[in-house]
Length: 391
Image (cartoon, rainbow, N blue to C red; front, side):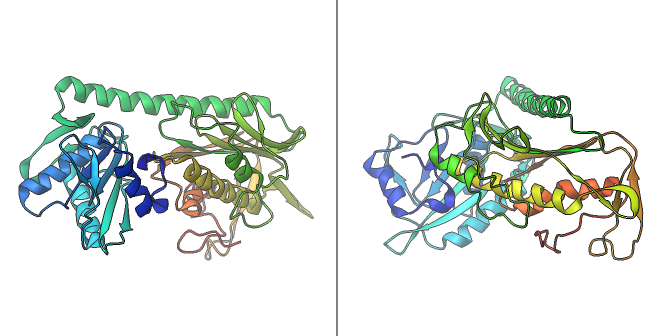
């Protein structure tokens, strides 16, 4: 059993005990510490080195309260006290003393039968790195090779910068290709328009989806936590396709597709509405908002099942919406009462990177606010002050 392949919230004492029975050894993505880090400068520097070496490599898990032998093999669970306080102290120090600021750090306090705790700190792979320690005049880059930690050479620093730039370029190219293909393949009837919404792991370079995964297919067949009439449960069993898994009704849209690299996208038409006797055509705001929220709620469950720990890139495109109108909404803009028109053929929202989809409604709102702001309004309606979907 590999802790890295478990959702943090699912880890319990039996999982930690298995590290000992299976003689699990420290690795490039796993580090054991018998005790928490002290408060002296050299202890803080050690902690920052441990964290930065992982984020400058592939990310990983730091387990505090797990003892190891000279070979780095887990041998005991002594645990620590005051784990919650230690988690707060360590994360605060990481955020203050590593540049570029490392976001997406997760912690989990696992209680032991002894009354003590193991603190699990999940460190993401840095996508804006390399990340440098800046504690008290120390300006160093570190990286992890297997169990070993070493200063990064100039060549390694340059290589890390290029690697992250290339990763972002590959991702943007992939998303652009998906959006272009969507625009070229889906030609609705005259007067209709299309919606494309997606979520993609930041490093979509490996296959993480098994099309034979029955649990994943059940998630797609009966998506949990869906609200309103815009439910993504299409009562169709997901079927394998060239890219991964596809859910659709016959040859009709909407379509939901999960790629082998973890990319999730929703494609749909019929996003316009009219309001007789008004001759103008409007965006079907409730439909667009409802489907976007429900897609990200579904993607959150999918990524939890797949144990995706990388940041997520979200994107949206509206096609063929030239001369389509949008009204102000009293709940979102109480002091505005007007109607605005979109003059271009399409509207593509620049992709946004979020640490995770744990706050899926708020992630949906990030995109939807930009749609409404493109029309000149402050924000999308149907969300409360905390960004939760209200409909």
